[in-house]
Image (cartoon, rainbow, N blue to C red; front, top):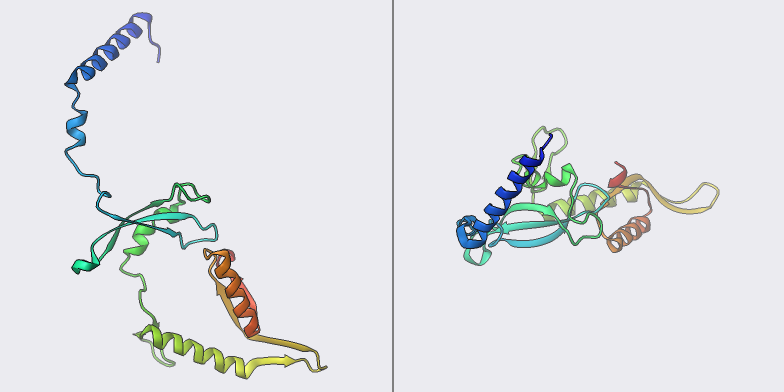
Length: 195
């Protein structure tokens, strides 16, 4: 775009006159700004970590609702945490879509089990799910644990079960998870970041 000298002066004059009118109080900006309340001003802010990959980006979740008044709290907005050292407020496309992930009607919120020979899933409690997992792990470990090889070498390994760790966990959680899994004798330990 080419601007002649005359057009340049006209543009400058229009800018100066409009800014002068704004200084004299003819600006509608203040009235427009007060017309609406910011949607997050009443929301509760919670810091968390994105659950998707091993990067561990920080997120800010905003929720409305008050449990003391029997109003169910609901997440209404998610954005990147600008104070987080990993992502400094940015999110990848998966992280930017977390709100849709949370409110998806297909999201599994409770443990379910499908018995052998059945084609239907039934909902069970968390206690029942954890008890069932522990029972199956103990039965498999008792059946397949190898304490020594044929030539007498102590190995203490359990090769029929693997463990998939969460990559967005803290260093401390990862260390404890690794120690527990290795003490059980599990050798097949992998991380969500590689899947």
